[in-house]
Length: 185
Image (cartoon, rainbow, N blue to C red; front, side, top):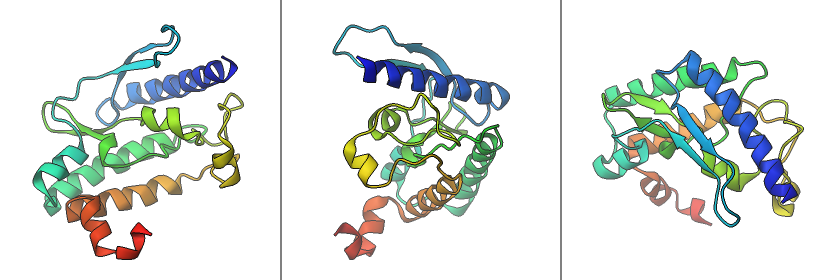
């Protein structure tokens, strides 16, 4: 229960920061509507977000293949502005899980960045710079692999954006991995 409470505290802090930034830039960041923390034992916590009816960038790339340059520019512009919003916060917020499934489209087709809750529940990564004193306990594997540190650079998000754009241009991660056989090893 102590680990669950530590995770809850960390996620509440993260969602509070996200909501503050989202209120400043609702055109860039997906809104968190409500969080459900007091659920029966054995059930996961839940977060209700803004409805994004046109799905994710991942779904778009899977359905359409590689995206045209103009679409890539529009997506890149929005994600760069969203990352600027996160990285300009004090202290800076590192998304840390930027990938095509984290880019969602609203009813008008505009992309927005979501916060990657699933990975935060699984990953035991750093949420902001510097690390929160309430960060949840991490797995021994995460500690030994060096994933856990006092800081995570905002550069990680820029690297992830580059990979996100490459995957979107090529038409999916499978296309990229097929082109780089040794990446599977």
